[in-house]
Image (cartoon, rainbow, N blue to C red; front, side):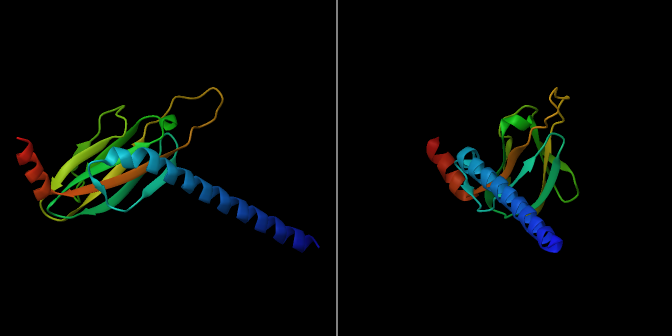
Length: 161
């Protein structure tokens, strides 16, 4: 009987953890659709959704491939409750190509790629001062990438002149 109760407890506990993680992912996905995708315009989303829950002080790094002949926008969408988020883009040699400004909402970088290359996207959430209630805020951060054909962009620019 004890064995049955122990197994039942483990099953319920495992189901609870799975439900919480799915719920968290779903919340981030909905946040990204509502806040992130509109900020990506006029670029076309590349179809990859990279999002996770972060707390102040967390960092993440992602390696992405960018194809030559396209303009790109790398954008970080984050919930306000977690504070300032920094976007940094590095090349394969870890040379910093871009760093966002402190306090920038939805930091992003627009750039053109001549040759296909891999870049490293770093995201860092600023540390927070101690909170009186000891509750650490947690929020979603999404890394979004949009693209557009460079030649089409140049044609549009010439037409607007």
